Image (cartoon, rainbow, N blue to C red; front, side, top):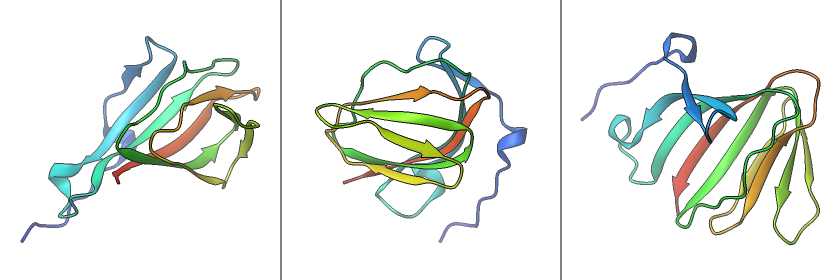
Length: 116
């Protein structure tokens, strides 16, 4: 049996993602949970006007909880989805997507990836 694991995103070192387009703080990984489905849970920040390149996760759903700011989630072959504070979005595995901060302030969210 594992012990409970607590972390505070504010105490974690920032890591550059996508060649400096975003910053993440890695909170939980599979080693912290008993579920075999958890890949990672992190906090991400992106400056205004930036857009991440197209990417996909072959074997993971990505769940995003918006905690600050506004963005567009571009989905390949579909209309972009507007995101704002409090929104929760699930991007299914094998879905090409690209996140764009369309607001005037930092976009922040909690990103959970789970194996399907």
